[in-house]
Length: 571
Image (tube, rainbow, N blue to C red; front, side, top):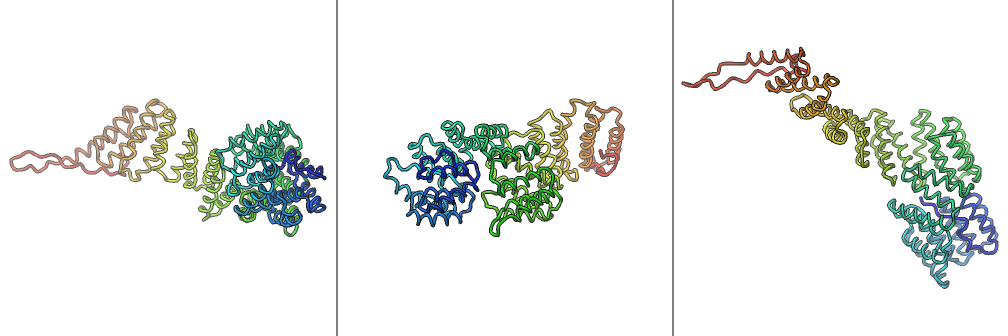
């Protein structure tokens, strides 16, 4: 979900009598202190029902919290008390847009714009509000190009308003990940207007975080705090980064986030999350239970179930963890469910026999939910590791194959684990093809040859087809670079060929392979004994054929078959 811009300086042009209090509410919203902001706007709206600005912002706070029913109620009453004020019309259109009522929302927006066209170039307050609405929500809601159009009109009227390019940036992000560069340009324009505009630095950081680039996103989050030490969202972003890396450093940022935030369920939740990260699972569960006990009758807080799920998983209670995670996925708003949530569900399904299909489905959702290739690769690798951990190698091989399809340049480790999984999953034909690419990419490394040979030999189950000979010869040629170091493996390869050729009764090639053994190990007793055995068999099978009348023998009878299981002809 793209959060709308609620800035300090954005709406100074909207402020009228009693504006200082409205400005205070806007400041609270900018800093993410929605509880305080709501108290301010609720108070003004109650005292002045006809104040369209207070009514608009009161509804906006509930939209930000995704309490759409509450926002709709506020705007329904406000349309009456303000005599259909254009700004309230936009607010109602914002609600309808997020409810999926696109046509109704557009009608509201156009009506508000039409009612204020008497002003030269339009009313920037209304144009900004329309742009803000279309910048909000996921890609399925609103029209980002329409929002950009109205915001550009507003920018001509208020070129020094930093909120405008911020919401243009959100609209660009709604168009798709390929427009991240355009969004970044819009956020940078905010900083040109106001060098201390912390929210712009924070939003650029979010772009780099979606690209899994910690060096850059940490830099921008830090800049946001440097520009405005009271900007709590940046502290939370830094806490989230360090929570899995350095729990002590994470605690420092969490303390600063709490100090600059309203005291509410969210702050308690993040403290419970910190307890989990610290390995204090029992204490984290207890804190979570306190949060649940503090909720009002109709109040919900879905992500507390996710916290419980992670704690119970660490405590080894997979069934309880599954129950809690399922409750979270059921109750949470769709746009707030992240790739990590699907991956968690997948890992839990994988632990319960018979749920492999559900596990795969959730990993597929995790990959699909991430807009960056790096993120998709990370989820595919996570899936592969999970399957390897539980010994389900076909699953590991499948996801390593998906990872390879996403990754531009495969490293040696990528090939190694992919081939290893293929062997364990009995995907011998596919593994041999992968090993060929391994050899092509890393011709000086031995493992590609090892995997190709193993896969090829295992493919020829009864050693009668001969499809492994090419792979064996390729590996042997590589090993001949150091006959001292590789002597044992070279002898095994030639021995395999002796066994194969003996089994198909190609004694000439069997003898040739024995001579190859003697070339490396002149005193090899196995090769010497096999040569003697082959010569004995060939001699014993020589028969004088019946010659045609008046003619010479036409040839010798076929040699008797060599017993494949005899010790002397088996490598």
